[in-house]
Image 1 (cartoon, rainbow, N blue to C red):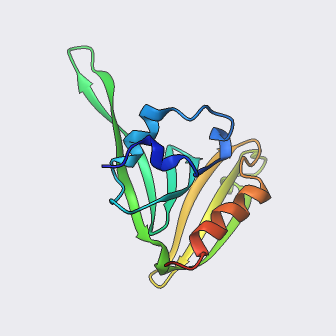
Image 2: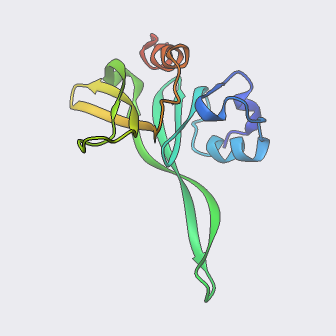
Amino acid sequence: MREADAFERTAILGLGRGAKRDPYRLSLFGQHLGDEEWPLVLLAVQGGTLLVTDRRILEFRAHLEVHGAWNVKEFQGYVIQREMERKSVSDVTHTVGPADASSGSRVVADTLILTTAEGRAEILVSRGPEATLSHREFLAVRDAILAPQA
């Protein structure tokens, strides 16, 4: 299990870029890393977190458990929602467009599209009045995913 110190050189992008590096929260992501696996980029996405490591691309969701008669949900950590090997991705693009086809909608979908041998994988970064991923941050994510692997 990896600790929070594995994230010292990790770029934190998107809406989380100004957040303090919380060692407890980072250690919850670190539990899912291999012994010699290094996190490169951490990006807050719609409903979860995207983590690009030197080997994999991981999309996390919060794991909540219901406790008691009042159905209170308690945070239990993070679970991997989707996982792919970095080497399987041949291209990464960033699109910002209408969230739905209804006319007059001012909501935009900010999306990363990963091209793999199996097809396209879309990751919704945000849905709102404007995009949250800057061009500079997109380039950092794309470069981390497409960089040569050792």
